[in-house]
Length: 80
Image (tube, rainbow, N blue to C red; front, side, top):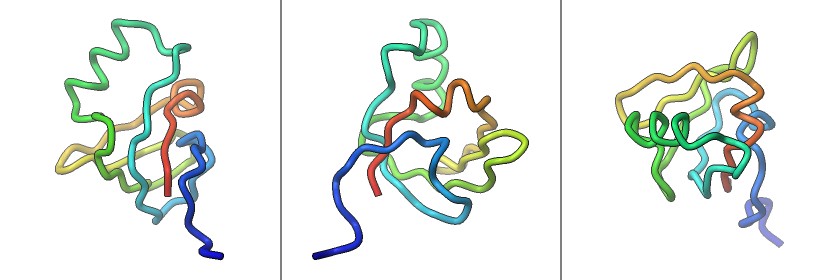
């Protein structure tokens, strides 16, 4: 069995250095924040690279580096 599978995980649980694909934004993220994240390039199936998890979750989406609070990163769903 392959170590990589399609189980959705919260972005906050992905170790730095890993690349994942965005599976969706949780309903816990309010509409305005969802709109802002989408404007920064967080679209479904888009590859994301996790750069760090502390003190904030920092990701690279295309050419855009984003720093996210863990309270937000916990509700961003990704697949490996």
